[in-house]
Image (cartoon, rainbow, N blue to C red; front, side, top):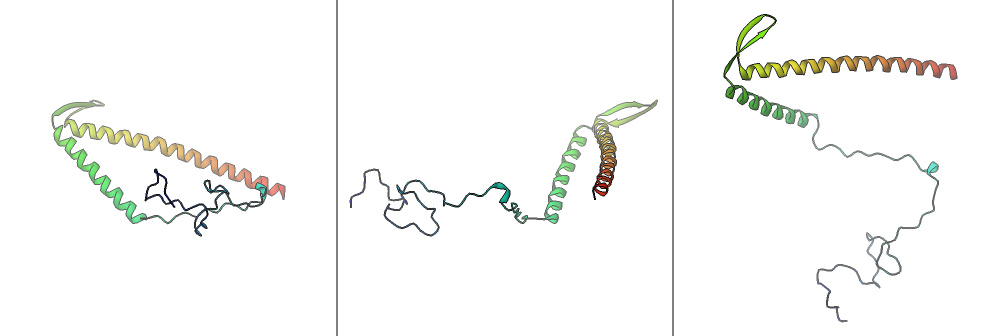
Length: 148
């Protein structure tokens, strides 16, 4: 049997008359396009619930904690470099009090104050959502009791 001119030795397609390997998908009568096995169609309502099998995580809480600690240490080093490079003293006034601070320290304190304000606003919102959830659960329980 002669091979066509465009045939390469690394071509792994099986001959058309060869039986497919057990792991190969079934092929159409032409042998080119894999076909789907024929199964009777079922309505979607009769399909069993999809099973979610989550793959086990590669790390865990310990690995996540170590990564967070390493990233935190990197951020602290970067902040330390920022404070050291911005050590020019600056005069500040706050509610009538005057004080001198290195510029880097003052900016760091301002960022911390901003983060605390953000955390306070977020906490208030989380408390509001908790109240709403509790109220809705009570209403749901009351509705279920009346339906029984």
